[in-house]
Amino acid sequence: MTPETARPFIDIHAPVAAALAAGKPVVALESTIITHGMPYPDNSAMAANVEKIISNEGAVPATIAVVNGRIKIGLSDGERESLAMTGGAMKLSRADIAFAVAEGRTGGTTVAATMIAAQLAGIKVFATGGIGGVHKGAEKSFDISADLDELARTPVIVVSAGAKAILDIEKTLEVLETRGVPVVAYGSDIVPAFWSRKSPYAAPLRLDAPEKIARLYETRAALGLDGGLLVANPVPESDEIATEEMAGYIEAAQKAAEAQNISGKAVTPFLLAKILELTNGASLKTNIALVENNARLAAKIAISLAGKR
Ligand code: PSU
Ligand code: MN
Image (cartoon, rainbow, N blue to C red; front, side, top):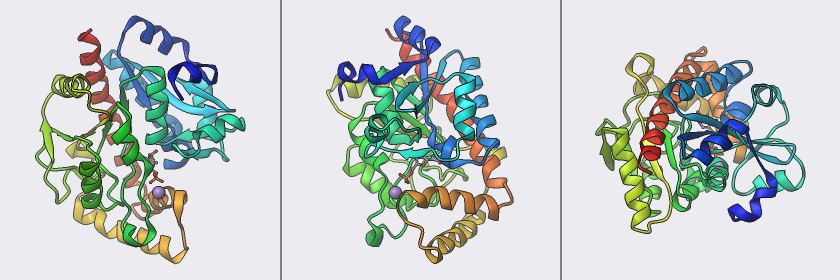
């Protein structure tokens, strides 16, 4: 798909189209976190709130999804609410976004599919919670998220709280390095672990200002280096759950997944739901806080990039 041939399949929400035409800052948001990552109505409130945060920062939010076969770049309040309520939405990555379009289906876009759609629309910055990565036990299951390959090929800045701690963070970092993806910890020497501010791993790169992240992105483009940039933004201290505390919940969730033979696309949503249950909702509160924190930083990066032209 090139932007030209993709155009007939894409609907750009009016405020997003206006911002893009004027060179104003736009921040893309994913929707698997809405359809598969959080329960209703928390997902709906989170999605609306994150958009508001981006607007308040001075950028234009564009929540991306596939609705009845249309690639939506930005949703109206009503479209966003009905997506949050949809029971049967697909989980769309690079492998199945075209299927959903061709078959007129509805789905939430993962980090990978959201990057693809953002790139088609000309959006350079994208905020999420945590990226997919190398699952624990991947040496047996081969379960490695398509998000990693997408980061290697599609030039979009992805602002995350690191890789979800349900993953093998060390192997995830190794794959990102092999595939040439810069991993930049924001204001930290340590890679964050989603619900916790710290993992056991040193940050491959560190930057302390949104302008510096924008400059790194432009420098990579100028050097002809393909692919995206992963920003790992630690969750605010007041919202974190300590690494040691999370470890127990993660292990229990993993055991439950094994016992119930959960595999493939179902693994991440299952683990997130299980952890929510085990933490009595505390993990969800943290998840929402970190997405909001990432939206704020993504808006600042987009503003810096827009100011450069
Ligand atoms: N971050 C969250 N919740 C989520 C996800 C990310 O806070 O539900 C989603 C993202 O869309 C990510 C996907 O791309 O999980 C990864 O799924 P998989 O491991 O199957 O590639
Ligand atoms: Mn997977």
